[in-house]
Length: 367
Image 1 (spheres, rainbow, N blue to C red):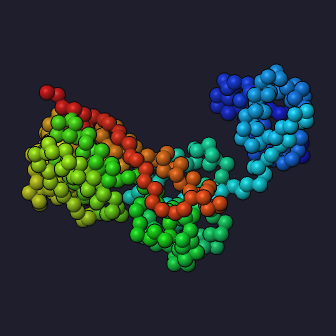
Image 2: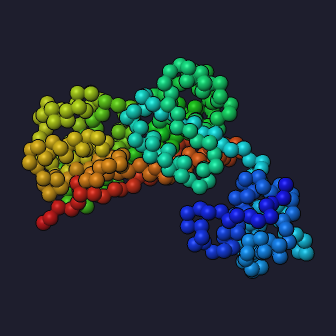
Image 3: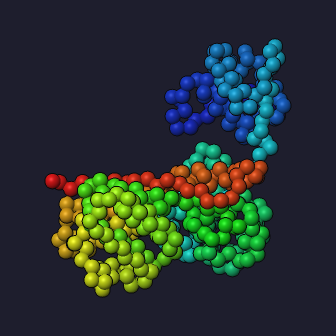
């Protein structure tokens, strides 16, 4: 099939502000993706193409040069250009993203990464579904359709509790990607925020604010024991390397009661948060509760005590935190799955550097 006689220029946001040769190139590539140009077909002559797009020959030649650079057009002197429509031979990727009750603690992070993934230009032509697994019937659907799924993303292999038949089918295959560290390295690739580096960044930031006495909180009733350990380890290692720390204390708990009532948890341990000049929590959830507790006790944040979290949870406009680089994780996930068809990318652990989100709760104190 030849191209349309009067191609309509693609009308993406801001398209009309692009240089003309880019408009022509994008339109021709879009038509290739839509299957309007057969692989091996000849493009019309330059004169005809220039008339079709209402551009000059110089502009048209710039567009064709860009297409040649991308391997979408072959040109021989004195002959018309030949289409090399690789898109006709590509199968769209099918990526299933598991969510649901078992992942509730991680749902905000899961959703942040998912939203970034579906906005990636290179991923938008693929089938990416956010799918809630509720019962055994859903798991049977997954098992039946596994052969057609190029990427299966779960928060954590152990938490997903997938039927053994599912994990057996993908054992050693990096089509399954987890967003938490896992011991099941034979099952999945792991794409995670570098938690230890994040803990170190948090300690460095607070020491630069002049803080010297630290309360470190690793309180959670949930899933993330290993990341929490790394967040605490990175923080304490940096404190000890800094050589300027007067004192620090670490509190860890996996009790639901401690998570629900942080104030009582500290009181039972004989800890007065007002004795410290910085509190570092390994989750934003606990950091927000700590700020509320300090305000109840008329302790000013950050004037008297700095508070810092970890996760970058949206909607916390006051909390200084270490954020998950959702875009970086999304890009790595797509690269692993896209490369999986040619085995270019082996499975393994991919660590994404966290990002500092500076807000009022830990800004430098006034002299």
